Image (cartoon, rainbow, N blue to C red):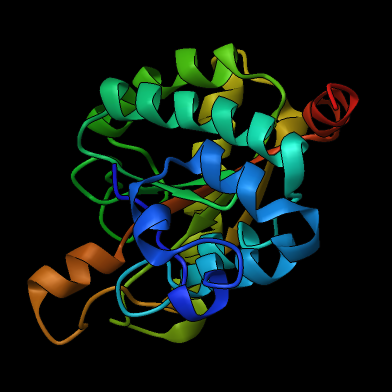
Length: 224
């Protein structure tokens, strides 16, 4: 799993850069504390992804901090590891006190110019369902993306429909509908060039932002 390393210029007042690099996310949450949580969260969010933070990274930027943040971070560390084990083809990244999950075409593929999930996509989503069920106190935002080929209006609608298809499939497997929100991003926030077939393939993706719901936050704060 990629480690999230915030700007040493910001963190230096709290901890040395070497210590930050060698710490896990739970330790970072406890050391940063509530006072600096929002600042550090912004730095983490702005350093997520290739070529930009991406929408999921921005959503995950804010943090609670303190011991509550450390408790949430510990749960997210475990969930992130389980996602990686369940679906090695996914890109899993811990951001703040949440998880950024990127499913490229090798993990979730759709029929050309359609929002219909392929059989392979359904099989890979099936691997995520047990993990999501094991951690019911999380909310999941789903972002659909396309490449820049074709009309913007078409791509925008296509991205919305693809995010909705992923949500509908996960709900059909028994996950609670209220946990999910969907957004279509069209060709926005590309993570690769749209000038090559390989780059366009990378940009056609689905991203998840997994965050603690209010129940997990309340329970974590009650442990203090």
